[in-house]
Length: 138
Length: 138
DNA sequence: TATTACTTTATAACTATTCTAAACTAGTGT
DNA sequence: ACACTAGTTTAGAATAGTTATAAAGTAATA
Image (spheres, rainbow over the protein chains, first blue to last red):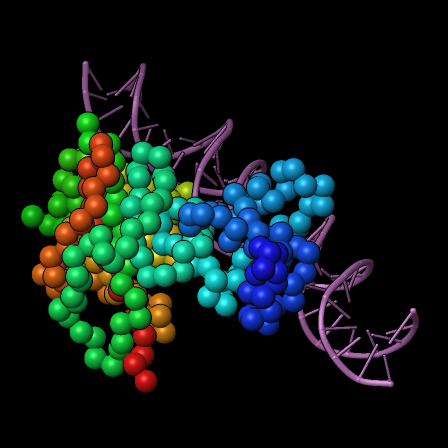
């Protein structure tokens, strides 16, 4: 199955019409080895750099929002004026490099088991996310 | 020592002139029992609700930014279109209530000791922050 | 009191994001 | 193939949070 067919399947399975634009966007997001941390403007730059058929910003916003709502993207919590997204939707954690503003994933196996000793009556834990801020050690 | 004298001391110790506006702002931020989670607009609303000497938005932004840079406030990472701040500057963690968007602090003693098993060469861990998302259990 | 550096302010500018409404397109039935 | 409908894209306007500007005001210091 080609990459494109896979993406069409992914879109259809979320009840999204596989339009030209969505497929282009999904190629950038999901056709890669490693997970991808990005802002809307990162994505727009990549999409519209070399192609003659520019995709409008509104479509990029819409598509990212809808992919997030379908669970194909995650929004990341970092102090910033921009919103970051992550193609890694599994439960995982981040290193945030304060010198370069870079994000790196790490996983449950890279951290000791976390146990919350306080419980909030009537509430259920939905997720536990750890943000480790790092910086040059010198 | 009065509250005001304390705040003046706090400002001076950070090389900040204790102006009328800064003292007003600090009163709202620091003269309270519990820690305070707020956005700029929360703070502006409180400051300018009943007083006749309105403090300009620019001053509020400036002051919060400078208090943050001096370590008297912390910026909080939450997915949101607004920036949140916290008067609790100690290392601590948050519950985020997905139903109400409320934040609640919790501390190192409420969580098992966290050990990061992965190390990034040349980098030092500056902080470890945990965000626990909770929601109604029904 | 005079001087200087810092601070406040209104307002303009900027930037990220959302809205709008018209044009376009994919899917479906005929 | 054609027409219909619902869903999608688009440019541009609108909105909202935040930062910059430059003039007026104020605190500290001598």
